[in-house]
Image (cartoon, rainbow, N blue to C red; front, top):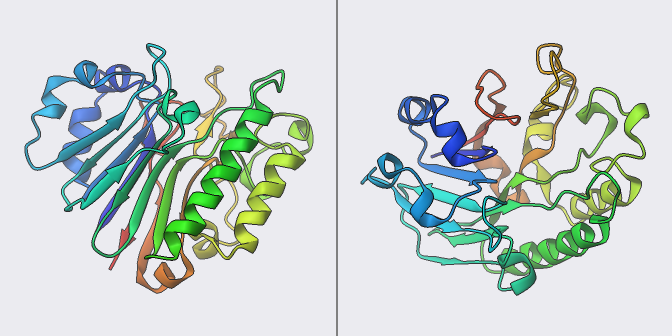
Length: 252
């Protein structure tokens, strides 16, 4: 099974940048998208007509903002949102139950340049960890998406310069530590423990991506009992169309 996750920074925008061709070529069993910035009726019709995929989405009340969508060829037994109005109004979470595991597609809030959204983000993080731990009691869990946090210094190009930047604040990284202490596994880092320059987001400023001055803020976090089933976890950094690139998880 191949699962891909991608913050597309607008599904209508990325659609015009080769997304349909890329989707057809990769042909994932499940595709989780974040920041789709579209309601259901705004998703390009060609994507909705992909009859082999069932589409799930959660869009924000605010137009052109946030939102997540999942395309699945695998049978989804049940799908819920976060069940917290505060987060569902921003289209941040889809929780899918499959036969052997839960899959959570999540778009974590950005703390904002002036940090005014950091408390909101941290509350969301705590709620998500609580949800993950609760689901894990029933069956294994994979949570994927844009976490908007680089965990360790290895996960961004300029850690010293960004210690006071949201996405690398001590409070954000401490929550990540707490999640790992709860025995959740950052599977890319487990399989690539010392790989540097492995980033999933780059500032849109000129030449930043070309020089690979990036951050790794998109993840697959999995239950320990799934680790032995993972064939590979990769960052598809060559794929353009968004300020993020896709990430891939393959399970046996």
